[in-house]
Image 1: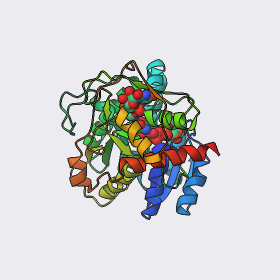
Image 2 (image 1 turned 180 degrees about the horizontal axis):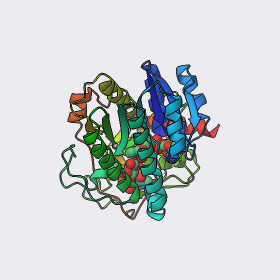
Image 3 (image 1 turned 60 degrees about the vertical axis):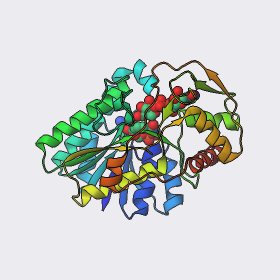
Image 4 (image 1 turned 180 degrees about the vertical axis):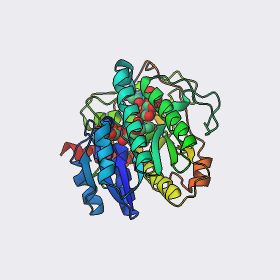
Amino acid sequence: MKIFVTGGTGYIGSHTVVELQQSGYDVIIADNLVNSSIDVLDGIEKITGIRPEFEEIDLTDRVATRDFFIRHSDVKAVIHFAALKAVGESVHKPLEYYFNNLNSLMNVLDAMREFQVPNLVFSSSCTVYGQADVLPVTEKTPRHEAESPYGNTKVMSEDIIRDLMKVEPKMNALALRYFNPIGAHPTALIGELPNGVPNNLIPYLTQTAIGIREQLSVFGDDYNTPDGSPLRDYIDVVDLAKAHVVAIRRLLEGKNKANYEFFNIGTGKGLSVLEIIHAFERATGVKVNYKIVGRRAGDIEKVWADTTLANKELGWKAATPIEDTMRNAWKWQQSLKQ
Ligand code: NAD
Ligand code: WQD
């Protein structure tokens, strides 16, 4: 059974490829390597013993995307990770984000329809909820006006998929709304490769711990949260990868209840920035040089998931303790220095 993984050399894609291979699926990746390296294939191969097929394709290229589907008529399902994901950058380059994230999705959907590849799993995000009034957020929580062009591409992508599924009853799509993915594979052979100075908490934290950055700025301790720093639902990347395997299986086995479904993928627990720092220090024995600074523009105060639906329908639950996730993130950071 062959699965087409777009963006499969990226952070979440590579971990998902490993879990798919370890569950017996064949994988073919297409990625234009704009935000990942071909060397990731070596890491995947070292973990699983199988080198996934790979093609360098820009999925905004309609002809190239169509040709891919013509050449690979054995593909039974698609997991679409390929996208640009830097929230701040998207504010400055809105057109690049809309162009890349929406055209790649539409090209993939159009080819799936034409060549009758019926099953899609799509990477959505908790960003579609913005700052919800009631926490935790369930799948019934209304989506919020997106705060960034990036976030808007996720809302729009979900709508494009939903609308297409209405008129393509033989196709099935499932969107996974990831909360904050963190960590790395326990082998430290694959992990997150931030571009330049990281914007996200964990890569900034591990780069500070190893001495690449002098100090981690904690963006605000005056929020309405127990310790004043913002709360997020940090989901281990391997747990997240496993959610894709169960999602794919659900579609391939025809167990889905509608031809468009969406699920929250998180731990169900909110952790503060300070709790994350302390979990890292506890897990690794390494002190983090940090300083409380002002709030970061655009940050929300708190969000965490109600994962009841994913637990019940997908039979999936986050399982990795935060300390293990932190140790894996640290092992990965250390492996990058060698
Ligand atoms: P990533 O940047 O590591 O991976 C994305 C991959 O897509 C990269 O390898 C990149 O080269 C590729 N890509 C981008 N545009 C492409 C194009 N036009 N054609 C072919 N390949 C292209 O990001 P990630 O963290 O692994 O995220 C994967 C998906 O999950 C994205 O859709 C992202 O928006 C979504 N997501 C990520 C997070 C997060 O915090 N990491 C949270 C929620 C949702
Ligand atoms: C986490 C917390 C910061 C860096 C982003 C996207 C979201 C989704 C996940 C894709 C916040 C604090 C951070 C630092 C800090 N991605 N922080 N110092 O902003 O929750 O979500 O990634 O869909 O759409 O917006 O993640 O890792 O940037 O921040 O104090 O140097 O860490 O204020 O509270 P965020 P993050």
